[in-house]
Length: 178
Image 1: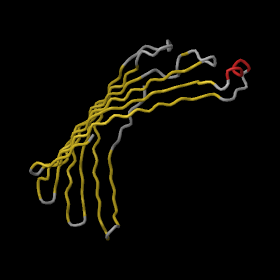
Image 2 (image 1 turned 45 degrees about the vertical axis):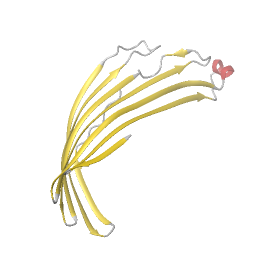
Image 3 (image 1 turned 90 degrees about the horizontal axis):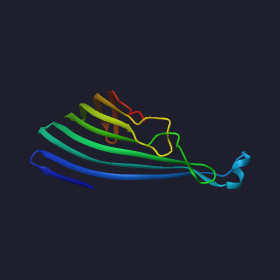
Image 4 (image 1 turned 30 degrees about the horizontal axis):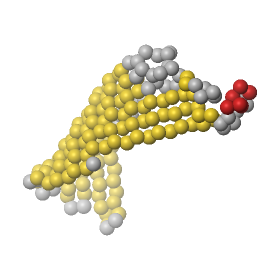
């Protein structure tokens, strides 16, 4: 769901999202004699869900400049199940886990004729948490927090209609999995 509106020199957007991915793996062949009577059999399943909210405000503060400010939050949860050849459950390879992210950002854009310069920064607070996982007994659920701040600067120039050059430099962060 996305709502957009304009108020004076501001363009505001609110976006809510949700998604789900389900997958299953089946073993169809095996050289293991004890597995052969059960072929094909389901060996693994996973459910991954995402949901979040994004709020953004672009303030046009002069004829050639605007400031984008935003906040977004997301929760992602992964549940996995492993199976023996006879269909009974066993402990999965990885623990069930949840990742909560809260991010804030701002980016200023300056426009001069056919050139745009951007400068911005984003800060994220991320919590990765392992969850109690049925049949997985070799771990203790825990949580880890990360805070990261990532600046960026960019330049874009239009040389001719349809021909642009763009360069950006910045720092990124990839959230580790549980």
